Image 1 (cartoon, rainbow, N blue to C red):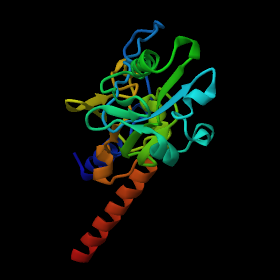
Image 2 (cartoon, helix red, strand yellow):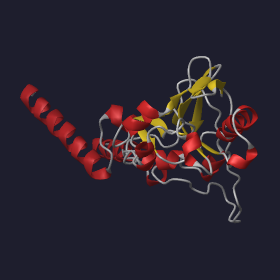
Image 3 (cartoon, rainbow, N blue to C red):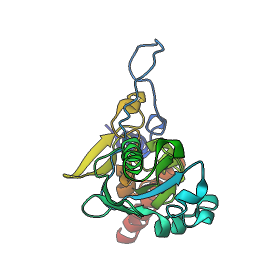
Length: 260
């Protein structure tokens, strides 16, 4: 085998291994040979409240005056903001309690939002109001917070004002994964009362929608690790890889001629 053949094989091999394949960039692909169309079940469990969560609690009645003490700042309900919800919201303390006017300490640790609403309604009707008062309670998280880090366009903590957020929505709100981000092994770190748990999800596979971390939970941490191409420094596309190879060959040729 002559030197030209060796060089050609080296060149082709380097080009193939240094470029990011298109298949690694496409989300939710149907993998396998089956062509049947089916509905994929989506794993979604209700979020259970934890310490340091901030709740937006609104209490209404037929006569607004009798519940004014619970809603002391009506403008906060009209023009909410991240800072205002943090200051005016009800924080779940280290014991799992929220401190409400009249009711005092109410434990909501491990409750879903609906269960927390029912608990507050029950306490109000049992001890302070009659059914005829038409008490209406709304309990929501004061923003859906999560953090994205690694190979995405914009890292950092985000807040969305909606009840459900998928990992694809979260990544889209961060400007998408970069071309050298590993879509096949995205990590999601989730906090539980007993500690943290790490999940791995392959976003190039349509089965990702069945993953327990496809739907995020508040305070999730998403990490997208880089592909090997970044550490190699050979370029993300064929053109970039070719430029890198030409630079290396030029340097090698110059060094050879100087040493000759």
